[in-house]
Length: 268
Image (cartoon, helix red, strand yellow):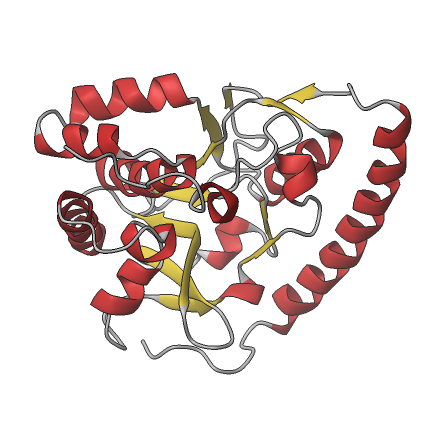
């Protein structure tokens, strides 16, 4: 299907705008709160069952599981609120938070050899998360959302057409990978994995965006090759939280800062 240029789901668009307003208000209030109690932290569960057991009778192509990762599951209040927003809008989905150690174990077990070796060469957390999300979606399927991303519409409604995958584009028609949904064994995800491995083995850039990030989709996917939606109608980013709250215990941990002093790929 062609890249969307106009709003097709006005309900999702306006709900997203309301959540953006709510998130920014709560983020401002949280800034005041953390001036008084900077140590306040909340835990994200490693796994959570669906809030609702009312499923469609048909078996969906995309597995009903929501994947997330972060350098820690001990998070600030805004990140916790962001999580709660996602839980409400993905009530029929199981939730899985995967730690760095669990990701490494998964990659070594499920993708030993070349892929595992490439993963271990990545030195920036965002690049590792980029590759892991592709691997876990290829193996198990499901929906991946960045820890600072939140749904703008109930996930079951977004995927009601039962696609084999769903990617999102911004208004400038460029892909973003902070939201990705796929069935297990999807050939498009495999293409992204193979291209990421090729770029890790022969790196020509230290920019994570082009090394393992959405630049892969911009380069590989021509119009019509995959199911695409306008990002504002599916998922939004950075409304409930920001770099300060996301990296409150790891200042400078974001990839934009890290790439200035760290080589994204460790030389052989």
